[in-house]
Each structure stands twice: as C-alpha cells, then as structure tokens.
Length: 151
Image 1: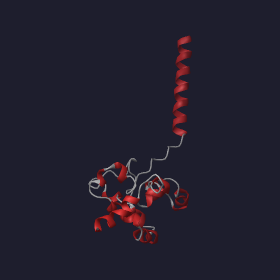
Image 2 (image 1 turned 135 degrees about the vertical axis):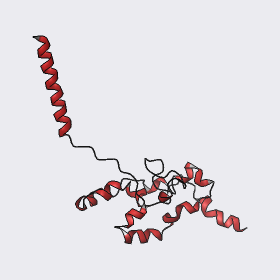
Image 3 (image 1 turned 90 degrees about the vertical axis):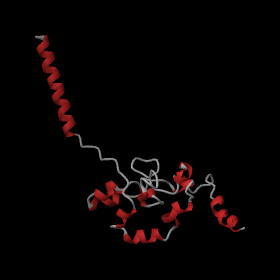
C-alpha cells in the first residue's frame, strides 16, 4: 500500500512539474550583434549622421599592431569581449568601429521585435561613454602622434 502511494505521489509531482514547465514563458533569447548595416535599414538618417562622426572610423585610429591589443581594440569596435561581438578584423570586420550597438546594446532582439515593442528596447544596454572617454584613458598619445610624426 505504501509503495503504491509513493508511486502516485511521484506521478503527481512529475505531472505538476511538467505543467509548470509548459506554462512558464520562455526566456527571451540573448541578443546578438547585427552591425550598423542592419540598423541603417530603418535608421538611415541616424546612420548618415554617424558616418560623419569619428566613431564611424574609430578602428582607423589604431595601427595594425594596436588592432591586435585588447586594451586598444575594446574602445574602437562594437561588442568586444561580448558573445557575438567583435573578435578581429579578419573574423568580424562588420563590427569594427564604434557603431550603434556599442551604446544601444546588441540589436537582434530589437530587429525581430514587433513595431509596438521596438521603442521599449533602446538605450542603456551597451557601454557607457565613460568606458572609453575617461580621465583614465590616455588619449593625448593619439592627439600628439600626428604632430610628432611631422617633426
């Protein structure tokens, strides 16, 4: 009698776990980086403005040697050190430079979202400006380099 009660109890517990698992909404997929070319499809005006900024050519400020140094690259590309982010110029050239997603966060979920949900998914998910533009980052070397070369 006790064995059959235990069996029934385990069956009920298993069924309850199954029902809860089926009823729980799936967690949203982790966003991945899509690159500025995808953002441009809907945000052409913002893309045109970005193209006039130094951020759109940030990788060009680094020498080939510096482009291999994580401490240099992290501020000149999009998503460095993040899943699906910039890896190298050879592997992920489409994420070179400081693009939309560097500040707004990885955009795949925004791209797939229904129009009514898109505005809820912007800002505050990427880096903070101070991550690269801070008193702790020595940018004087970069500003002084052209003058030093001219001498």
